[in-house]
Image 1: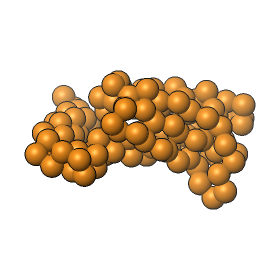
Image 2: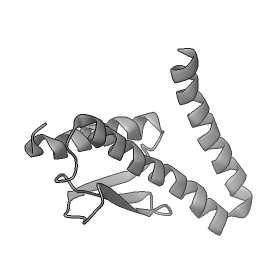
Image 3: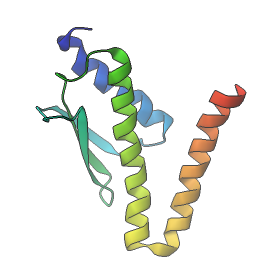
Length: 115
């Protein structure tokens, strides 16, 4: 895969994962950056449902790496909701944990059981 395709492929993969993980309530901005030693990183503002993902296209050499990196950063965003709830609304944290478990249950059931 050429470096020119890395960024659009990353954005597309992140969009797919965003929908699959139920993160459509987030406004996600993606920037290209030179992150020494990292494929990507993310900064999340869970209270305002915004995230900025910085993507290092120079380190991603294959579509699999691009897709796995998008999934990795999206999981950080998903877990930021739980972290925010635990830190700021402990009683609501159980609701957030259940939401994450239900989403993972749905995704894993499709993968494991083919449903």
